[in-house]
Length: 296
Image (spheres, rainbow, N blue to C red):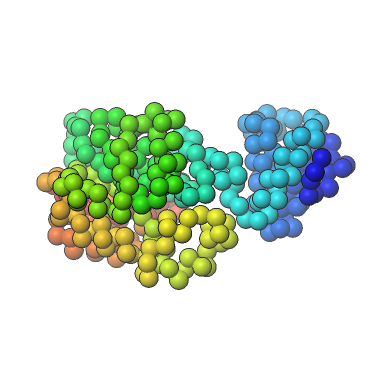
């Protein structure tokens, strides 16, 4: 067995958990015990109940070798989601790899707000043209397509790698999404298309702050999906400038925003001159997270 850690005296699940968590603690990971548990469960393909009931069970050399490899990768700050190749979003498993941003739980609020605003504006089950700008793993566009099968969902991303991963997810989850490659809304403007709903979780971290991010994010997640320009608002400016040429007579626009950006993004949305109402919605931690505009 070729391993980096010393597993020679480890014979049970509990001992493996303690050895792995102790190693991760030394390396300064965020939550060593929980991370060690997740890694063991991943190696064994077990749920939490089975894991907790099997603490005194023996663990084989092959599993320890796999666990060893994961421990070493985690010690180098590689995100668990990339190591496992998966992240859950809105109750569905999404494939994630380097090249796409890992979906965050707070983005589920963006999806919920879009559906709630649409339900008010279009009480009937209408066939709406929806676009998600910045595909990433496809979490937003695929969720909307599956939750609202009557919607015609399009998504645009600059990255061929992200588009490929999102296509994989759409295919695996059975979502009908049209994929376009290009810079923000350019493909739609060039085709003269207008939409009922525009949703986006664009890059919003100010360039100078990207270097200050945790290694887990800065080193491993794609900069293209993080860097929002000097003040983090570049994409919002461009999206809001395009709204007059993109939106139908009745429309919903929803953006996820970074901390302290909601007021500025709401002002940009109002300055587009085409929104009748603009609202800021906080996440569960009370951070202003979504800016949503309605055109009646």
